[in-house]
Image (cartoon, rainbow, N blue to C red; front, side, top):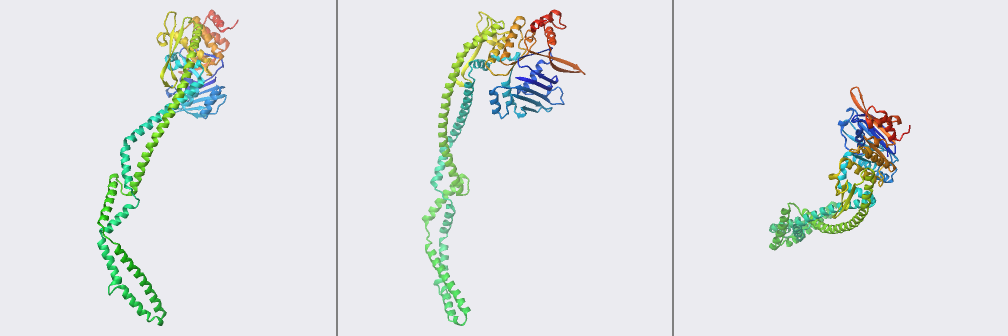
Length: 553
């Protein structure tokens, strides 16, 4: 329940602190005094958007704070889901600075407006005279039946699974779209891959072939140079090796005379051995140089293939072609894998759909069973508020396709008088009838929910006299299940409250402000008497007020 509401710098309010009782709280006041401003401020800590133009003082920030007494474990779970500390005495605070920036806090922890709204909706339900339009909303009509069907857990489980189902469907569509796009390119990519795979490219192949071709194209001059080198070393009369041999023989004859001669000759012998090896290698290399037109053609064909692939794919080396081949291989493999993924996901979606169908069927059965009871309970409350011939009829249509609420469409039909066929409520109900019908529905729903606080904002439009008394009895009866705050202009309803607050205007220093105070017993008699007869109230009005309030002389 809402224990205290503090308002600073909002609309006509400079500073107000409102402490509320746990039962039925009545708020009355002069026309234009600002009764509904209280609800405007309260809506800010329930997650509504704010505008700085509503500030009382444009130089100060606006602060709205509500203190709540919480007992529901459902709320505790909601707090924990949002990483918030849960206390039985919890505070929601909203601060709007002069530049329009807004901050929201729950138990002094910063939260988003979405989180504040989510939690606020579990704390307070505000029902205004304009909210009677809500009764025409098909979603609200369905919620009436769901509340009385008492299958909240099943419905939440269904909605969570349906959300997952839609997410899986979106994932499947994305996969199928990507697969279709990949499949449209598959034939071409397969051709490119096959072309590269058949080429059987080797990492250093291009350099080796280019070197070999260069040698083959220059084989004649290479062979000639190798042969000339061999002849100069070994075969000619003036060849190096025979001359070197003669030098060695000459030095060998004088080795005994000086050790340095021996060392020098040893070096000549080493050179002789090295030159003999070089000569033999030159001979071998020369013999191995064989010009082959077939090999030249073979290498040219291979290089033409490599160059053609490089030009086609706009790369400069074999490594890039091999990388492209691997990329195409991965792409083709991924396409095969995506087909398998699509198949698995399709089966998973089918399984979820089957479970959703089963859950939707249970929801439909529960709704069907609760409809007759709902119709009877609403008719009973309508009888209490002076509409003995009024009735509602709830039509249930089971659709083929699943939606976030199952498969049901609910249509609420209403008839206020005997002999009048039930029709859509917005077309046949007057303002007063609509207010009482909505009150009947809200009062019944209140018994089946754990909502701590219900606020009525002048829903007594279009009623008076005996009917007003009956409406007051119904509103008063709600306090057994929850805290009720009722803003009213009818004395019959105002007299039902345990606590009565009066909203007033102050006009000082050419500035109008709004205030609120809790009425004493004496003040309350006077206020109710004024509501009955106007100012100043006469003696009979005072006596009538005492009677309405149940005060004995």
